[in-house]
Image (tube, rainbow, N blue to C red; front, side, top):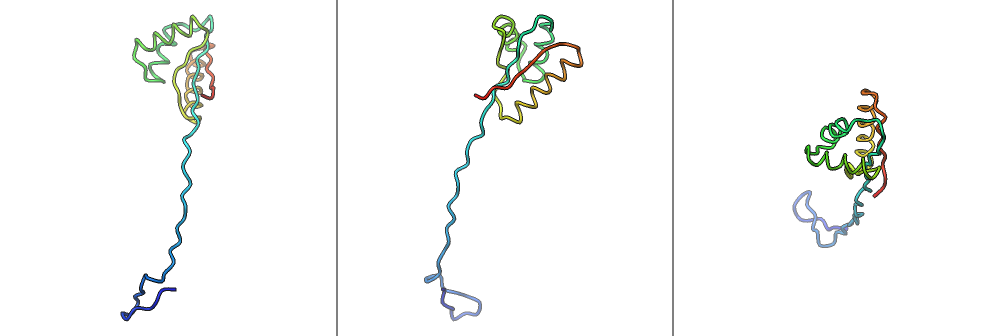
Length: 110
């Protein structure tokens, strides 16, 4: 216990015990890929528009990804935390639904 100092309300720190709380290391969140799946009906221009608007891609980058999806059957739109990836997929699906396109997206853990 700390000893009372001569001054009122003051204590000497020499005998005081200090509790030190160890801090847990924060873990980086898991990351998820947003994948776009090819179909035979959704127009290429619509896919490029989606990639530009929802994923912030330039016209050239969006066109490159669109052709990759068209040729390989699947392409990556970006890598995000789970909540952001889920939101992006929902936004893509909503845009496609409004325009009556069957465009599909999926999430895959990185």
